[in-house]
Length: 538
Image (cartoon, rainbow, N blue to C red; front, side, top):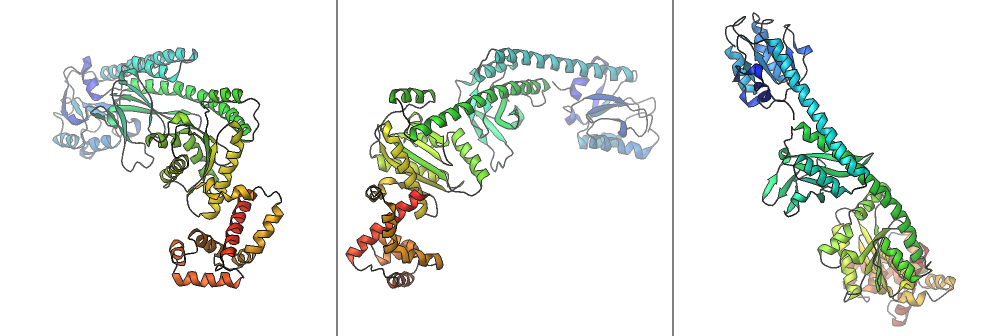
C-alpha cells in the first residue's frame, strides 16, 4: 500500500504533531522526506516528497515565505512539516490560508522534534512497505507460477488470485465482454456498463447486482503478450492507490497473458488444420464420410445433414481494415451471437471459417422450417447488424443433403454471391434458387455457344454501355424484374418516367424488340446466360 500523509502522522515521532491546514490533502502520497536546508530547495526535491523544515533558510525573506506553499503544491509535493518557535514564533497566517485553498497539508511539529529522526522514520516506513510489496508480489508470482507450470487453465489462475487478494476478479475481452470471473461472483448478476462516447478510452462501470463500481473502486490492468492485447484483468473493491494490489494484478496479468498466448498459438495451429480440412470437403476430397464427421467434431463442428452453405463477403477496398474486421467477426463469434440472440439458430448448429477473402458459414437446417426463407432472414440479419461497419454481400446455396453435395453447394453459394454483386451496388442477400435457370444453362458444355447467343441478343447494348453512360443493361434488368411495366421500372430505378421512355427508345434503336413476347423470352434467357457467364468467369 502507498504511504500517505495520514500514515506519517501515525508514526511515533509525529505523536505530538498536529495538522493545522490543508486537511483535505491527508491522502497525498508520500514517497520521500526532505530536509529544507537551503533557501532554493525546489531543484533538490522529488514529487510526492514531504518537506521538513524550521523555515530557517527563508524566515527573514517575505517573498520566499509567501511562495513556499504555492510552489510546493505546484511541484506535487505531499505536504510540509514546520517546527516553529526557534526561528519563527508561529506559522504565518498567509501560509495557512494558501495551504487550505490548495488542500496542501501543513503539519506543525512540537518544539522538541528531531527533524533528522523524523526523516529517518519516514524513510524506514517507506522501505518496510516497499519490502512488504515485494514480498507480496513474490507470493502472488510463486503461487500463480506453480499453477501455470502445472498447466492449469485461466479459470484456475483467476480463482487463485481472488483467494490471495480476497477480492473478486474479472477478465474482460477487448470489447468489454466478461470472459472469466472468480467463484465469489458466480451466484451474482454481473455486467459491464461502457461509458457514453467511449472513443477508445476504455472507461466503464461494473455492475454487480444493484451495486455499481466506478473506476475509483476497482483496479484494472491490460493483458498483453507482445503486440497482442487479449483484454483486461479487474479487481473489484480495490483501493486504487493500494500498491500491493496493483502489483498483484500486474503479476497475474503477465502469467494470464502467457496462457492466453499459448492458447492463441494452439488455436492458430488448429485453424490452419481446420481450414485445410474444410477446403478438402468443399473440393470434394472425401475418403470416408464417417472419418470426416469424426474429424469435424475435433474442430467443434457437429456435422449433420441437411446443411446450407452461406458465404459472407465484406465489400470494402481497404485490405488491412477488411482483414481486421474478418478477424473480429470470427474471433468474437459475431455471427453466432447474432443468430442466438434472435433465437434463429443455436450456435452449435453453425460452423464459420475464413476462406478466400470471405466467411463461409455452414448451417445445419435439420429442424428448420421454410429453409430458404429462414436462411434469407439470417443473411439479412447479418447484413443489418454490420451495416454501420461495412457493406456485405451474402450468397446462399440450396440444401446439401449429404457430404457429397458440399462441393456443389459451395459453388452455388459462390455463384449466387457473384450474381448478387453484379446486380447490386450495396449490401445484398442472394439465394441460388432465385436463378433456377442457371441449372439448365450450366448443362451446356460449350460456353462459346452461350457467348454467341448473348452477343447476338445483347451484344449491342453491352457495347453501347461501354461507350455511353446510359446504363441500358441495368435498365433492361429492371424491366425484366418488373415484367416490362414502365411505370414500376421507373420507380425502381428512381428516374423520371420520360427518362426511362428515352432509354427504351435507345434499346429499340439497337434492334431490341421488347414488344414481341417471343423475343422478350429470348431476352430473359440471354440475360440469365449473361449473369451465369459473369458469375463463372470471376
